[in-house]
Amino acid sequence: MEFEALSSAELAAYLRSVPCVYALLNEPGELDIAEVGDGNLNFVYFASNAKTPEKSVVVKQAPPFLRLVGKTWPLTRHRMEREVAALRRFGALCPQHVPRVYHADNELFLMVMQRLSSHRILRQGLMDGIVYPKLAEHLSTYLAHTLFFGSDLYLAPEVKKQAVSAAINSELCKITEDLVFTYPFEDHPSNAYSAAFPRAEIERLWKSPALRVAVAEMKWAFMNDAESLLHGDLHTGSIMVNQDETYVIDPEFAFYGPMAFDVGAVLANLLLAYFSRDWHDRHASADGKPYRDWLLAQATDIWNGFSHKFLALWREHESRRKSHFIGGDRGGACVEAFRARFMQRLFAEALGFAGCKMIRRIVGMAKVADVTSIADEKLRASVEVRALRCAERLLVDRQTLRSIDDVVALAREVQARYPAQG
Ligand code: SR1
Ligand code: MG
Image (cartoon, rainbow, N blue to C red; front, side):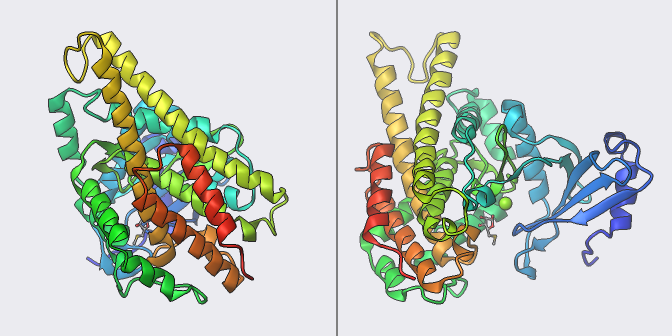
């Protein structure tokens, strides 16, 4: 049967029929329903008790297609099960940073979840120049906990393998394999260019063997390195914030993949926010220079915080278990040497993934508002060139950029070398 989105009346009747939701909504006689989804995949509704509007939930339903494109791009509705499972797993590990799932329906492919009514999407906050003082602390905790506790550093091998198998998410991974790692690096019809974008810039990347090989290496890692349960789409539109709290939403792309993919997504989106400040500073109340510095400080603090917390979890776990992943280590030098190499590899991979993710947002079909909202065509093109040049260096030089300070220096250098036009 052809899919029809639920009408407000149907959804209200449904929500009243689910006892736990009915109770959460304060036993509503009437519900106010608003469709608010602006994402690429799903329908999202706010449902509030008409008499006590603070009693409110979010309902998310997966249609059998990609919302951004419509029925011509069919997509499994089982993605909702992946998202619910990931929210529950991440919520168990990091309840302070993950919204609660109140109810899931595997026949309607929908879930009812916590409404974050005093929070906003981080990307919008960054565009408006808002400082979030706890952001780096919260995101580094979220990344360290979700990535460490999903990995073979913590889980028993048979539990981990079972978890890998339960989290298979082939259709959504295929979207990433195509849209992040393949189409932007060829002359694909789904690519989209802004009006003043200099085509020579992308031709240059397509013809760079060093870049093409680097991207292929990242694609291989994405497809093969089942290291931990990932969010899988951790851009700044998947994060909700206020001055005190940070929540990570929308893990429908969750699967077992390389840990650095989530870290790289966060870094990529902070860099896109940084390069687009020439436009947003014109409208933000804050002074431009300190805000740019704050954005780069977030990248620094998130990487350093993540690395520190991940290592602390690892050391604590092995000390409690009285054994090491690498086995007996007389003298103890090899354990720490392995950890140092492990984190250096993660860092290099995070830079490679960040590079791919920046390029896909400039050249590929799914863009980001930080850049698309730049109404001045020439200025937007300057921002796009900076993002591409920085991304190229992140990919090609990912082994020689040894620290997050090197990345910050690179971002500043690119910003200075490609001044804003327009
Ligand atoms: C075609 S779906 C486009 C993008 O939206 C999601 O947020 C993912 O980033 C996906 O690649
Ligand atoms: Mg999403």
